[in-house]
Image 1 (cartoon, rainbow, N blue to C red):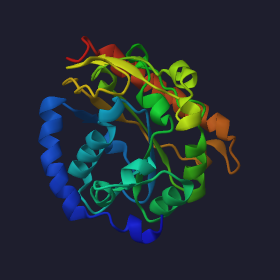
Image 2 (image 1 turned 90 degrees about the vertical axis):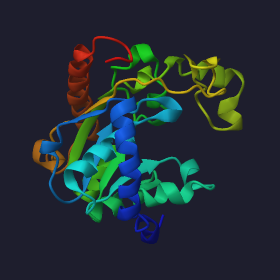
Image 3 (image 1 turned 180 degrees about the vertical axis):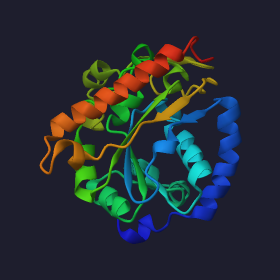
Length: 264
């Protein structure tokens, strides 16, 4: 995507959207944002996060609402996103609020321009993980985010969130089902997640159940300077293992605080 598209981020429009979203997030999901005091005060930064909540993932709204409340709207938050968000009648809304197609060129451009870029390495594999595995960091072996931070010369900011996977009861990613009905061949989709929720009960993506008012807590961890910690020519797998380790430890701590599903 060319720079003119990244420049379509509209701070005024984003601020108006946040003014509507923020009270909803704080009431319906009782959203908490922790750790922003350690966030880099200027320049590009790559936020790497787990992903939760299926079709109604709240990770980006919770992070963005907290970030803009803390730092204002001089520094854009971009989200590396699926191409589907960039098509149809909602494309302009997403572009104006900072969603960009997930590829290395866009990530590099946004980071070098001083933007904060959110990446969910686990993608669909992570966002539809079973609810019983909600406290597990699993990127499905994807490590490209490390190279993206290195190429742009920016710090990695690990971030973890808990609660989103309780918006309904996610039973399975349905990898076996997608393969059985050849969805992987027809639509290049490797999962067909099955969940149970309100008001339709059992769902294989469709019918679409409404998200429960689960409490969501997001914690931003101290930034990682890859070169300073791992050298000029770091082993990408070693960096990835370290990032997932610090994220898992933080997510375990959030899980230990949680007393009841949905209620938090």
